[in-house]
Length: 109
Image 1 (cartoon, rainbow, N blue to C red):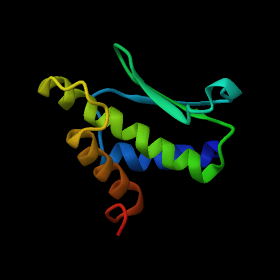
Image 2 (cartoon, rainbow, N blue to C red):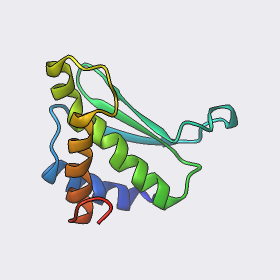
Image 3 (cartoon, rainbow, N blue to C red):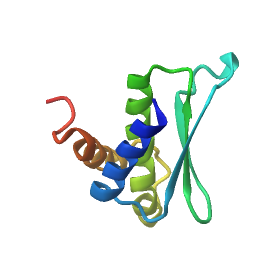
Image 4 (cartoon, helix red, strand yellow):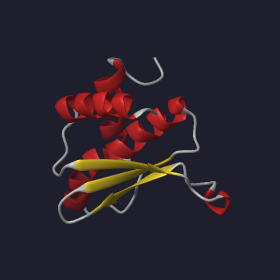
């Protein structure tokens, strides 16, 4: 995904699906041994960090950005609920908000 497109997507997400901390996105090539990693989200003390595999197509990087951004949206609420499940109903609702923020419609419709 080009930097200009990434910035545009992030502006839209920040506006329509805010998080409790700032979100930083980086892209980097992931080793072949870590092919299962398409991307991931980490929470630091002052910001979330989303890492996307730069070897992916632009379309898949976008999908992974939406997926990982949903983790950032859901994290605080999951902590409050005491859940350890990464892809629970809280995350699913956050993914729906993230997806609608970008596409303007509900996933899979």
